[in-house]
Image 1 (tube, rainbow, N blue to C red):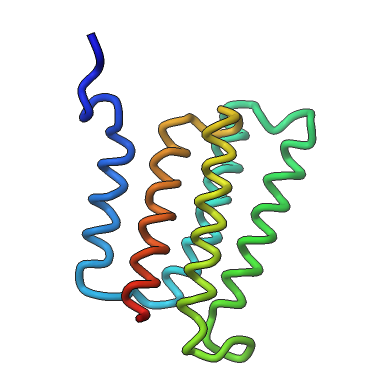
Image 2 (cartoon, one colour):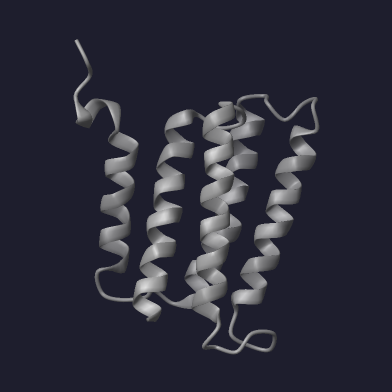
Length: 137
């Protein structure tokens, strides 16, 4: 017997619902979307610590590098003084798509975070980035 779509892909369905609710009134503030780019890798550090998966194989270093990289993109996305306000949505979308790839890597490896989390977060990131692009057009 195969599991139903609802029980097997609940993280994806929940993520799509979250993105729909978040973007239904238009593009959220740039600062909010940039802050999420920093919060997401912080969640991975918390999960990794809680699951004791940050030891060995450079796992902690990789997660900290991810935090630094996504933090840098978040800073670049803030309208002034580095990026013109017109470019901010595009920088944010690129950062969110990059985080979706980060989630895909974690989902495939099964490391650091639960697979349901990386699936949920990857769908939120990819759908959120797509919403940013569509609303910026």
